[in-house]
Image (tube, rainbow, N blue to C red; front, top):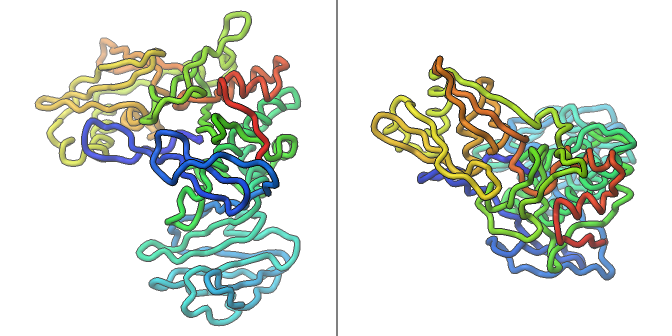
Length: 430
């Protein structure tokens, strides 16, 4: 997750701030709560009687300079704030929209003036999808003028249709023998989405369509096996104490998942405790992952350049006191053996980084974040610093490669979810 988003930065020891699971009423019988221990509206138990599938608002473009729209059968335009009809774009034609101060303006394909419109609604005039730039989407789109930024595009559609464009990108193309893993992913992604309705209300949408929340590709990303898994689990989410759980998931745990408080600045949860990912023969379920074991290496010059740049973003002016990077050392490990804190020392200062920030500080030579915080530091005689690591991702919740191996071994999606979210209940909310 749904997961390895870049943490928010603040001066100090490099702790992650991150975003919490925000909650809101669905304006339906289903009320979405906030997990205990996080800030936000008062938590309300999930109601299941008479509940209807909610719609979700997905930020698919945020603050871009311009947007191109089209649809096979044409587009019907209206002012989303007032409901005023604005015109129609013929099928095959393309509409180009940009921001003009606090409002929107059409620069190509205009059906007429849209003076004074801040939020433009575009709906397909027929059954076909809407095209946004070069991607196709179900539902409708809304274009929002973002002052001092650009245009944001929000895809509004039923939650189940949203999942059709999420699950394939989160779990990849899978074979029939791996169906249960795809179904488990569908339930985890749905749980995350339900818990995040209202999550970015100030920006005009619920979730980002990127790794900030869950990767979403619209119709272009859909795959037959993922669609079948979404349909087979319709309306089912994981709950604990009547509340949607924090359904974190990651690529590869390396043999053992982590308790959430070990790897994130989050309160403990009984369903997010460390779990041994061990098959009956004693091997790790996720040993099939290409990222089960890894090695990274930096020359002193590469390490100094990478780390000092990241520390400057994390600590601001404090990072200037570090000077040339001389030493990297692990200062604390978690109970499951992951690295909790790393200290970076220079001639006159030492800065400490914790949890997910470690992965951003120790980017590889191509700029990718570190695979995980489960590693050892191995200095070499030639001055090169090596890290020998296990797994990929934050390590909390469901291990996706472990789920795939469990599915191949015949486990059901219910068994997979029970293994990675112990004690959570599978609940149909609509």
